[in-house]
Image (cartoon, rainbow, N blue to C red; front, side, top):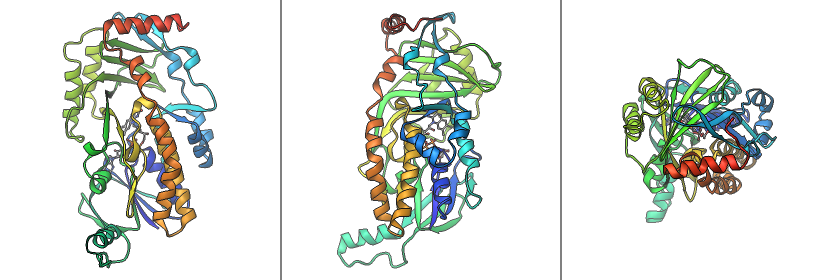
Length: 390
Ligand SMILES: Cc1cc2nc3c(=O)[nH]c(=O)nc-3n(C[C@H](O)[C@H](O)[C@H](O)COP(=O)(O)OP(=O)(O)OC[C@H]3O[C@@H](n4cnc5c(N)ncnc54)[C@H](O)[C@@H]3O)c2cc1C
């Protein structure tokens, strides 16, 4: 089949790899000008490990493994360690592999068959699903007409190009444009968890042997994470949804700067300067997407686009990987019957999504105590559990 994938993140690249190696004609369209390789380490957990093993990528992924949490301390305003995450909680098992998001993106991209094309700097502008039109017509007046052009999805890209595809997959992340076009506005499906994450590159930070540091003020944290020759400033803060254009970098930076206005302890001012300067600055709300179905007609959603569990779950990447694999396997099994394949994909993936979306709250309380008293209590509890400050 001729398949268009929107988004070259984890879900999109995994779909392209899985579908391309099964003989489909796959094009990926990515809004950014290149692969987006920023991000703190992400986790591959549970059955997603089998998925990357099935792709033949497990050894490469293990080679890039990092153990971030092991090296992470909470620090006070002078940078003195006050607590760290208990070793017992650090996943260092065969059931959890932590690696840099950028490394996983590169590994997946390198594993694409030569037949897969990635078109950067473009995006889907409109899409018309002939089957969905026919269904709508049948529902409307019962005459069964309406498509008449044979099955397919007609796509007009933002660049002005056009194309017809057998299937379109929305793997374009939490603010998925495909979801917006096919299922309607984000607000209808979004559950905000009251937290934002922001990341900024720290090019001036020398590679350090020292631990990564997290500093809390009530309802906010700022941190420095170092790895593999690079370093990133990490921010989290409690906030209700702040409406903004998701493509407007200046607006995204303003949300962070407003959230930390007046905060001057530890390295916060310097880290905010790094955010101001970073052209690849990244900001995301911790929001989940809850949709009753992930497909309509010839269009299906994979990864955060369909079922973001929010970064607080630590499971978005694993869901993207299992989703891509199940979808490709079911298309293979069901042949031309994409409706049956999409239905089976959903049935297999849904339990993983339900599980992941249910696992978010303890992370927020740990990382973002709301008051000074709660920060002190968190540190005390960590020390009492044997997770000292050294
Ligand atoms: C730059 C970046 C940094 C991240 N950092 C972290 C992190 O530190 N911690 C964490 O837990 N999660 C992070 N994530 C999210 C994490 O990668 C996902 O939650 C998870 O891996 C599921 O992946 P996904 O492919 O569904 O979504 P994503 O990885 O978000 O990928 C979506 C892709 O679609 C592209 N895209 C968006 N809109 C369009 C459009 N209209 N047309 C075409 N392409 C489009 C995006 O540019 C992106 O490449 C980050 C995502 C990105 C893009």
